[in-house]
Image (cartoon, rainbow, N blue to C red; front, side, top):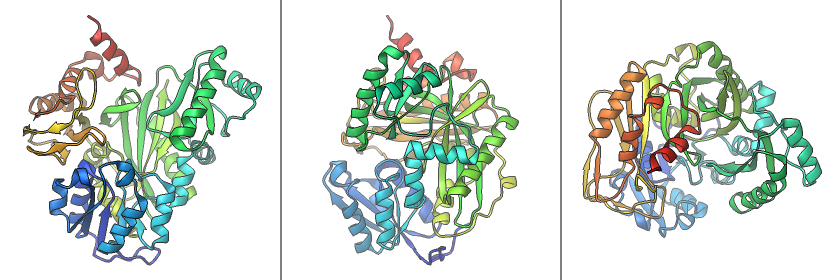
Length: 463
């Protein structure tokens, strides 16, 4: 049900207009949720995105800078100025860009606007992997073996920590994310160089050389738990996803629920995630990411934003996560309890990227023809159309094809049909690669871990 315009939040803020501080398919998705809630939208763009279709349906469309993301979508001052000039009362960051930037969230708050997401303090806590791990341990969330402190500078002390954990270990940047700033160390002789290199990577990529160390699990799956929290201490978890199909730590295919995990195993973990959110005063949507091996869960990080793969949880849970995120920012209490959350059927999402299906090099250019799948149980989230110019400046994601069916096998077959009906002309895409993946027997049986896709690609590349 749509929330009334001008709903008063806990802090006394009112908003009837949302500035969408993002681009591409997620800008279109947020705009749809706002429209369904009766809210006006302001879309921003760079010079490269002036012809974006969501700009034509927004109440205001503002160009805030050049094509470079650093001078547009990452330009905090320009975004805040656009909000002030258009009368927007809230800013939705989407995913990527500034969505998990605690300083930006704080700047939005200080400007008297509503940041549609957790407050800056929660982002800071969960954005630092060390403080996040400490918070999870306090809430009883299972974590990967390893200390909840940063690695010391003393090489001998670092060596002792690795010995106590046991090789192989993984070195990670405390402020990292997106698969960057991490290095696996299989044996003691490689530890010093790995720490030195990762420190420099972390310094350059995240502005901090702080590292931490954990046990490296050999054959884990990547499992996520979606949470939704309001301003009033209420929180629920909306089932779980499997995001193990990854290439270079980047997700390619996601599904919900994660196959083969019994309710009695996942249930206590979901409850612990809810408890952790309540302890830190978290609000909005968030995702707890785990490694899962030998029927045990190990927390790795929390994403304090909307996820690319949120549609698979929407289709299985029946909740519009983006609308719920916006209503939480308005201060509206959750209308559902944990007993109301019943996930049904199975869902897959394929990320359609503008890239060569063999080399995975990005492909920019004009889409000369476009055919998208339709039918019951099929959803496509996209911003593209025939004649759309795919820019070389941003992420290669151009669409998401999502399916839902009563069983996993039926959902896989529906995705095969949907991919067969998907055609993007004028540029290269990863559609042929995805079609081949959904014919793979091991993937069809749900027996894959986070390393499987890389191994599968190596076998395919052999003559």
